[in-house]
Amino acid sequence: MVMVTEEQVREAETAAEQAGRELKEAARRYAGNPGSVDAYNRHQEAVGRADHAKARVQVLRGDFEAQQAVRQARAAEGAAVAREMAKDVEGLTASRQAAVRAVVEAEAAMGRALAALDAHDRAVRAAGAELLKRGLQVGDGEETGVHLDGSPRIAGTKWPLVDGAGVLGHCLAEGVAARWPRHPLARPLLAAYGGLSAGEGRATVLALVRAERGR
Image 1 (tube, rainbow, N blue to C red):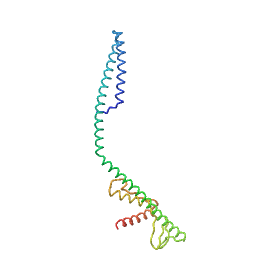
Image 2 (image 1 turned 45 degrees about the horizontal axis):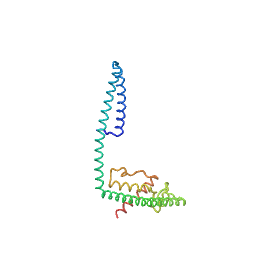
Image 3 (image 1 turned 45 degrees about the vertical axis):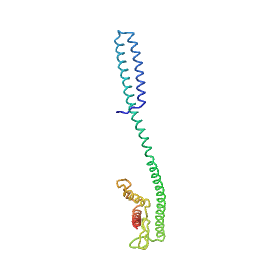
């Protein structure tokens, strides 16, 4: 059954009233000139329009009232169920608030992690700048010097730049993948912000993070 609105019923009633007025006018003209074919035809047409408009009102009103009864029954049932689920609502409120608190805490921790990762990246760049200032650049086999990307090598150990946001992005992707493997966030971005060295540093930090988790 097509849903009927109260506005549609009112519009149909207005149309029926107009058709009724037109029928009265046509009947008056036909009564005053019964021999007129035109008056007769207009009267018959007016009768048809009035009958149709009246029938439409009856059908629409009946459908509307039936649908209204169903809506009222559903509303009453919904109100009863809502009362029965009062405890469930309390639980939902508590669980949502707990989730909000957890997200706020995670945001704060993420902010600290981003600050720490940024500080490390800056320290790496500063060390590279210091080596460049001293004229030490990595060429063939030097143990200490700065690479072209600004990352330093000190005593044979390379300290790559770090895509800090990428580190957290990969950690988030791993956490999401563990629960919802098909979620779009379960697929981390492969490209690193800052180039190859930042990607290398991201991989290094992630490896250390995973090792730390396993302890």
